[in-house]
Image (cartoon, rainbow, N blue to C red; front, top):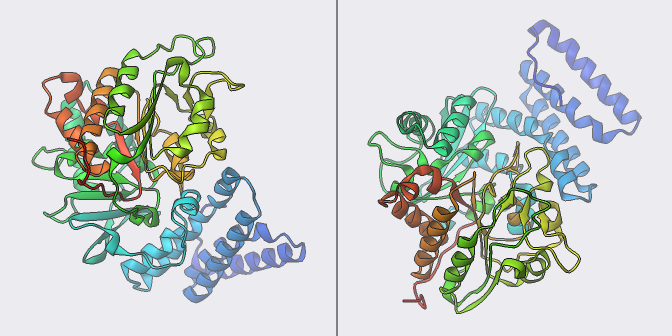
Length: 479
């Protein structure tokens, strides 16, 4: 779609007439799928001429065309790419809704129509149904971020309802610099200063002053790649010290909840240090500590299967993952920034499989029974950023296959430190804490550790949990 342009008012009527003629020509040629861009442009012109009703009709017609075109595409990735065009339409609809004074809940319903669609269709069907804030637990707050052309819109949901906040857009370069400073770990003073500034810009205006024990974030654009846990308030405390964190690609998914569960009674599939093909990945080391990690994780489950080294094959993962309620992978992952469908988990070859399990190959896998996937693997939460879907990472692909929650890493981390973080996570999970609280507690423990590698945010802030809400039950927890 063409970018928005601003014409002198006297030129708008002629441009509007030209857009209308273009639409008539497209319809005469039965090129319906080409109309959406022209309809969005005509809507912009109508808004310049104060014809908001006409603009809304054009925008809804553009969305209808895009939905129709999306439905004709069979492949999920094709549908995602095609529907990216809708972002401009949603932005204009949001600006119209605000100009008309619509309530924050109406804004959220409107903008939520486009976010995380490929994942929602699997995990949270029910588009058009009202969003239930009753799904938020006491002390839980949801923040929905949406970049508008000139500002950052934040919608806050809590037991008290929805509120809207209009914030200045933080420079994108500052977001990427902060992520780089956290990952690098060598400039703590610069990291802390920028972390405080971003906290003040992104969170302080929208968060209640107290009473927030759990924070759910639906990020937009580069915010999906931000290590939120390492942001710090004026008092210097990290965000993760204040509350647990959970990310979601859409509000409907963020509010999606499954019945309480007892992790110790769940079935586990744990894969450690898969013996990938060294000829295909020269210079990539094996991870013997990952074998110990997988075995120790399995101790917290009464029903578990552990596959190590040569037994941790791609074929076994394909066969067994869909039947496990918890899947733990401790090994290598590869993120492909240009072609996210080629991002992969490195597994052992065999049974006709090469051991490189690509994101596009996960499409045949159903994880509808899986409550949790833990990827103790570098860059498993990393990927190019979509306007409507968030980071196109391995974590997102597993959500799209039905997994309820995924723990994954934004960047390369120390393997021994990663193993310690995972063990701590499962100890807390076995005590009956929810996965998001278990991750928060393991990150806090790492932060307080005398081990400098564990205590550095470059390790613990890399990990994040994405997906729906989950409540564990302390009944039946292992001692």
